[in-house]
Length: 298
Ligand code: HMG
Ligand code: MG
Picture 1 (cartoon, rainbow, N blue to C red):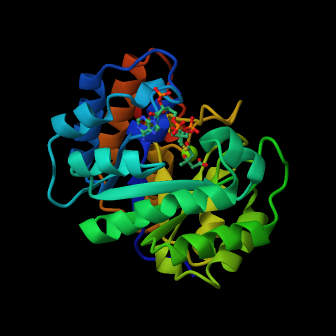
Picture 2 (cartoon, rainbow, N blue to C red):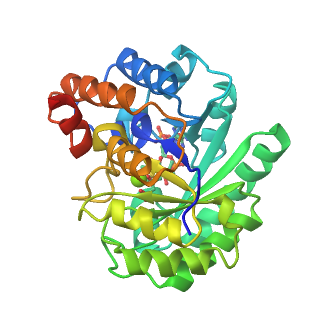
């Protein structure tokens, strides 16, 4: 059966913008986060404290975090690949830090320049520091449904990384389809396998929509007991180290589907649709959200 309520984590300020070629002004990033929190999101992935050599677009994370209006009911999350990133996150008063690994060795090397085992070792002090500081910890597993370099990802690899992240103390674990190749049946299998070792209430689905499968995959994940999903307004996004991968599933589309299913999100679809149009205009492109585009034409 489907959940009566889901948590939507809005990732556009981070996943959505990280892949933009032209530097997006800090003020625009700040306004994006503010508009999203006003629309009712309880969790917004707002910045990355990664190497600016690797992802130049996220170099202003500290300024973004300092400039936003903090809503008391919203968790502002940031990516932290190492202790240095964690210290910056702590200085920025992030509510949640995200360690991000992969279920594929090849992708781990390309994205964070180390093996899966090395990444876990690197995350250990971050996890420990997060616990000591009382900061929420999330773990993200890239390539859980396929890898741009290795092809299919064995389900055991996903479960193995999930277990390691759980052992590090992650409060929540993201099963991420980095390149959007996953389909509903496989998503169901992966989610059922992961939730054998992790409480389903702590597992999320992070789907990129490259092959147009995201909404079906979200439905399949809900049928497998998942009730946390990541999405990006206007379908913005992509990983610089996953060539050809397009944005996350569009938030407007997810909200529209949830509304039809009678599943509560607590988010104002109209406000999100307006934000989708607004940011698309600023980035000089058409929105990738079908629902957002249709709502605007009404
Ligand atoms: P490295 O080159 O192996 O490490 O990178 P390093 O320690 O030698 O550092 C390289 C340089 O970066 C040094 O500068 C460091 O000081 C600096 P230099 O001495 O050469 O001038 N540096 C930092 N600067 C600022 N903040 C830091 C930091 N750390 C090092 N925290 C590293 C290793 C992990 C740092 C690098 O590979 C990196 O930053 N990778 C990030 C890649 C990334 O952000 N990818 C996108 C996000 S993940 C994603 O999109 C997937 C997700 O959406 C889920 C999905 O869809 O699959 C989450
Ligand atoms: Mg992603």
